[in-house]
Amino acid sequence: MRAEWISWLPLIPLTLVLAGSPPPDPGAATSSDAVEVVGAVDPVDHVTARAADVVGSGMTGGFDHMCRLLESGTVQCWGANDQGQVGDGTGELQPAPVEVAGGGTYSALAAGHKRTCALEGGELRCWGMEIARAPGQPAGEPSLEPTPVASERSYASVAVGNQHACVLTEGGDAYCWGRNHSGELGDGTTEARLEPAAVAGGHSFTTISAGGDHTCALDGEGRAYCWGSNDFGELGTEESGPSSEPVAVQGDVRFDEIDTGLNRTCGLTANGVVHCWGSNGHGALGDGTDEPRSEPAPVAGDVRFESLAVGSLHTCGLSTDDTAYCWGFNGFGELGDGSTDARMEPTPVTGEHAFADLTAGAYRTCGLTGDGVVHCWGRDPSGAIAGAGVIRITEPTAVAGGDQSEGDAGEASGAR
Image 1: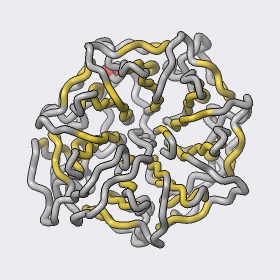
Image 2: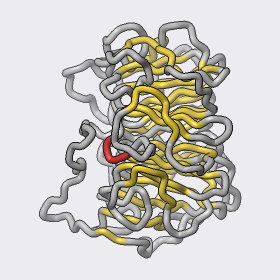
Image 3: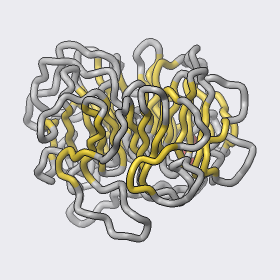
């Protein structure tokens, strides 16, 4: 989940899936769940969400919720809300976009595992599941609406991962907090932090992304640095072990964008080439194989991309002609190609939609078309996309919601 200008981040599940292991089932159906694989379906009985103008990226994906940052600075969220991740103060599932409580004018937005963070006037506010708690301690009460995070600094971007989050100041100083068992906070320790702690090394970053148990960032010249877990080569270094401080990604590739998933990383170059490294289960690196890589490797094919959206076990990109392509795990239809088959190379999303923005959640992808309609596909256990009883959506499906009179803002991270 990346932070860019202001900022993504993804969504990360708690299940670690090894290359070649059976597909994960984070939402296994109970007796009350109707598991159905569908194509495009009619949305629930609401007016389709639209915007008059679309300006860049304004969406971010969490584990089971999504959010939008509108041009006015208003934040809307929808989906599961059991930990208050929608931020409307109710804790109740919201099938259509609702405004977060308290109003406010936000400049940055990022969603992670059952939590969301945003910036208002440089002040950090978060809602949902608590991030800042000591290891082994029970989680505190969730925040059902935006709550200030104590800090003496002003921030310009934010990224939220699995159980940690990071921010950047205007000057590019990085701070992280939350769980730190693999060194994902980058402060030279493996101690959890209850408040943002400075990342070691004295680097100045322009973009930061928080993944499962690792974090990556770009400096002003496009050099990539990563820290934290390195079980699958997600740090992109020759060393096989974790690092509690930023280490340079090997190779001489410079990136304009970087994004992290559960245990892999992808970067986008200035000429539109996507490189990925780390875990390659289900072909998530897009290089035509399922072999893990510890060095950036270009995805297969000759498609040129303009943005990235990295989920837990799948990856998507928006091409220069506004076509969405996805690859990797597809058990819930998150690749949007009308099937649930994994893909090892970029595969076009069905429907011939022209997207202006893409974001990826854990097992879900959403795209914003040029006329302001949000379409989503993939896992939908809350019924927030297609209605109760449908948990798999294999093609882009319009999200229901109120008719919007303004466009999305240009600074939301996400897809993760």
